[in-house]
Image (tube, rainbow, N blue to C red; front, side, top):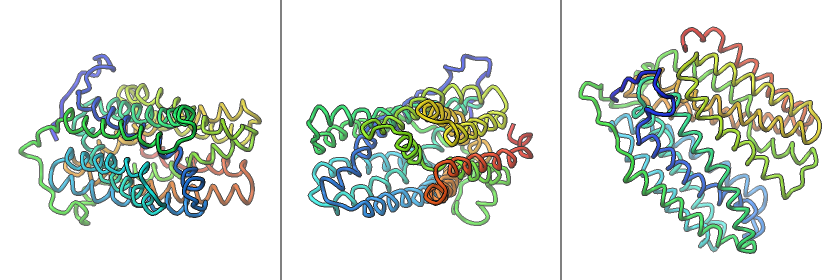
Length: 401
């Protein structure tokens, strides 16, 4: 896609196209809708529809695995057809259309089907949307672009559960009424991507890709891309599921009613830090920023493992959110700059598949350590993986700068 060069001395808060802002608000609105439902769904399934805890786990596992696999093919398809917006809009459209099913569902089967289609929608939109952000971002502003999108997305991640809590109180624990309210921001997100996001024209000289997932095309992603993927994979092994933050909060004595505030607090720090961190990454060494993010993760793990009580928990959660803000948009920017423009969709799809698998493995390892040796061993193991990722990053620093 066409590149636009922007003076790095310009204001870091300007110079981003309207399309990137629109995509950020699309992500935010859909996350508000999804998290309003997902924050209540496990309880709704078990209490409202009589599902077992095992059934909830199977439903969530299948849903997330489906999303990860779908991202690979949607990203590759966006490279083959040379367009991103249509696929992203289809993904958001599927997610919006499933939202009314949740309040109307008469049985577990309907909820499972809706959850499955919702995650297919997430998979379809993920890689093309990230590639579209990279295509729209001016040269020298990719860190800021991904940071802004990630920040707005994360605002939705903590507003959604907060709204769910307030609405459950307002509607006297009526799940269906809360789920109907969640339909509104989902369709607002769909309207926004359809009418406010314009895809940039494809340059005439850009190579056409017939089979993005062929061995020859995957080789063209380049050694630096696979190095970024390798570092991100080890990084992901160090930051297992945030569910373990909730377990740690419960362990130190936080009441069940207040436990959801753990994720609210973590996502608030994440949202506040992601955009400034992205802007900063455009102005300094990105490997140095990534090293700083790894240092924050190591600190978070050590604090959560060793610091006692609510103070230690609060510090650990804040550090965890800060490391997410510093690193997640940065990794997306590194992927965009490591690969040819015509293969960005494929690159994001493979990146999400591999790191998603690493997150699943990390959570299994963390669960085993927690059960066998306790919470301290879990977080210390996370710190050890972060150290390994930092050591792997050292030889790549000059190439990624």
